[in-house]
Length: 197
Image 1 (cartoon, helix red, strand yellow):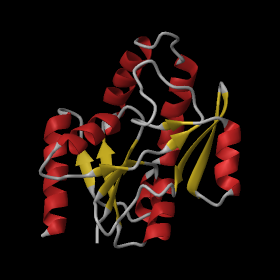
Image 2 (cartoon, rainbow, N blue to C red):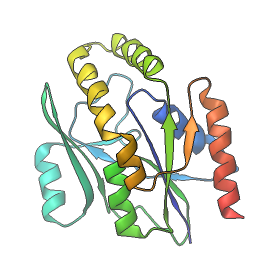
Image 3 (spheres, rainbow, N blue to C red):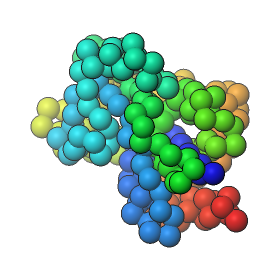
Image 4 (cartoon, rainbow, N blue to C red):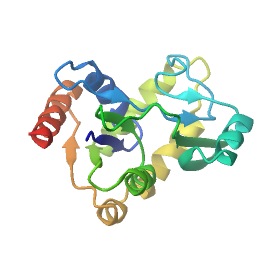
């Protein structure tokens, strides 16, 4: 049976970069689980890659159909944004290993849905000063920077990824990403390969 590796970390910790690097590795042959969101697409994103971008109405229909495994609502300065995982028929644990980006809450819900032995946490740690600098650099590149939302997320992450929440969710696979995402990816790849042995 395959596994789902859930990559977590505070905003601007390098999750997206590490996610992409892991998917590029032929020696791992990981498949992606593409989460869904109602938030606006960023200028560097493509639908179906980072996220499946949907309207609130489309989200409501998926919830009503019983397809939503887990859902999170964020009250942003631009209104409510939803992020969620859908059982859309694209996950086959009898044939593949998967990787997905998530939160503590989404990890716990995925683990409840698929089973503790199938869903493994990968937590990316980064110094707060480094994260803030990365977040600011990323936001400056947007055609319409949303600095207020960047600040809200930064502060919210302190609570969402608190030490207590990580311990309660049994998230113990921690990987430092203060320096180089490629090195961090290599360490995560070794972790995945040891699990397969």
